[in-house]
Amino acid sequence: MDDYELLDVGAGARLERFGPRIVARAHPTAVGERGDPAAWSRATMTWDPDRGWRGDDPAEPWTIEIEGLTVELRRTAAGQVGLFPEQARSWAWLRGVVSEGVAPGETPRVLNLFAATGIGSLVAAAAGASVAHVDGSRPTVAWARRNADLSGLADRPIRWLVDDAAAFVTRELRRGRRYDGIVLDPPSYGHGAGGRAWRLEADLGVLLADCAVLADAPTGFVLLTAHTPGFDPERLAAELAAALGVPPRRIEAGLLRLTARSGRTLDLGAFARWPGTR
Image (cartoon, rainbow, N blue to C red; front, side, top):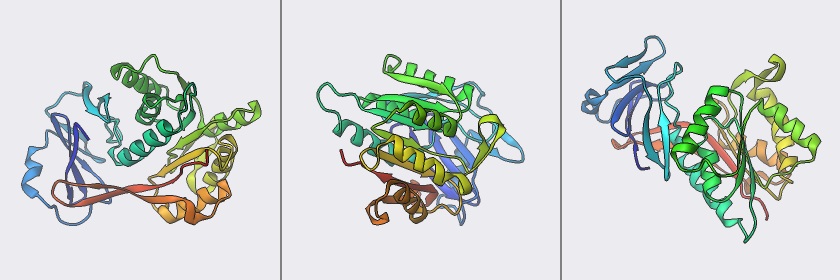
């Protein structure tokens, strides 16, 4: 990945390079000893939940090149910078499944739910898809649109939608809409339409069942990722298989794992994916 590198992991933190900036961030799964203790002195920014961000670098955005895209990064109060590099394998898979499914004169329709800063949407659009990009945060959708501008993809057929994901899916079902593929990265919890609480534990099954209808299961592809403890690859595969009506053994699943330059690894969630039968 061009301008990103995981440098080291351990002692409750992760050390990463985002272009010219070296960032140390607290992370609960970064257990054990650090593989390269000397590397941590190079950090130009640090974050932990108690003290927030510290460092000499300004808070203004900077850009990096990633997956053939130019994306804007900046510090958020939650310790994020707008890039989730553990999704790199998912982006590569998405690019392949979209581009392989494009026949002459055909434009696959992709729905990206909980779409964040839009890298998945831009990967799909660059591969030839029309995309419905859905996220509940207006500033985050604006951020994703800036990434499209920076990457030279502003003219691609992307609908930028500030909406509750589950409510949007319900309305699409009523409209009779269908998609060739669906991407979703739901949070552990949140607030949906009308203030209704979203909890992955309770609500994922219903959302996946609705997505299966939108994707004309098992015809369309589905890419599901989650960062919630307890949702390991086997559980995600079982949930997705139940929604699609296929055996769990036919679902590809695994860990969202990064390997550091030091050799240490960091697990940041799980994925389950179905390539569709088109």
